[in-house]
Length: 433
Image 1 (spheres, one colour):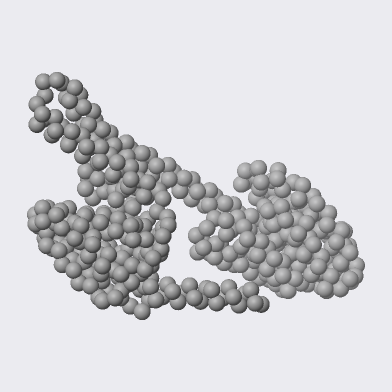
Image 2 (spheres, helix red, strand yellow; image 1 turned 180 degrees about the vertical axis):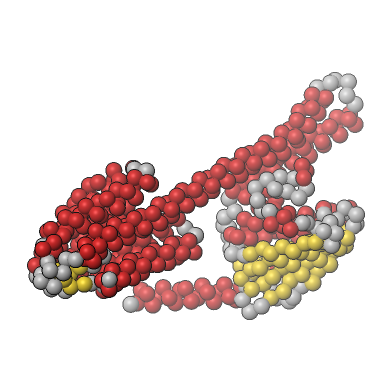
């Protein structure tokens, strides 16, 4: 009974270790991280099994649960030869004896066999893989009792047979089942992400098509009117102006899409926030006056960041323009800057209609606009992509009827330069070493 408890404890440690690896892979948020973490899990599991060895009296054989991680790693990842070599190496440190040579023959043969059948194994259904793993473990455990001469030992009681023929297959079955659940979860998540990407592309295509078709249809209509020889000169000029504006509208949609799809920052330079933000505010003054919006600027002195001037202007033109349009009956647009030792914050506040929590959480999604059918959502998507490219973050707070506050945080110029200096010094030390 003591022997059974001993190996069940070892098996429970292997299962706990597997769950720890899964949590670590989940935390990394990357699917490819499962493979290296699983390899590390197999190596640690083998070492753990060697720490829980049991010496059978009468023959020089050390027994443990190393077959459990060996079978799992060999069948699911095709690592039979590697794991067998590792087992032989560790077993060699315990002594070059009869048990060592039996280990070489036993695991060497299994490694070649499992390496050959692993591709076929992976093509089977999850249920078939679990049953095959358990069955092959039971079969070779049964053969092991004869190859190592365990069957004729005095202590070959029901307990020893239970350890050989029950605990190992159970361990392989439990771990195999957990792995199948992990595989199914990963595949489901990948399918969900693929579906979301396709839906986003479809929505984006529909949005762009809709927003381009409308001005082009209008332009075509006025071109047809211009073909009428009886049209007056005044109407002729008016129609040309309308056509020009509609074509500019279509061009703006295309440009927004291009900016979103390629937010790469090509030229980085120090930007004095007060100067750059004031340029944007002055640029939007005509629109603000048209909507009876008062602008208030509160700047801290001398705040600088590293970024692309053109992209920076484009980002805040979009945000301030949206803020002004959210106050059609007038209001106050406040642009404020704050700073700490490492970050610089830019706050853009309006006293407009505000947004619900759902609208705030969906900002930046493809083809999501708070303007309804009047917007594509491309403008705010461009803002989010530019801020990410400049290593910044966006936080939004909004209340219905009270207004919205966009808070942008960027690394300050001093912290960016300090990080660059530290990186160069680290590279120099690496080269010198």
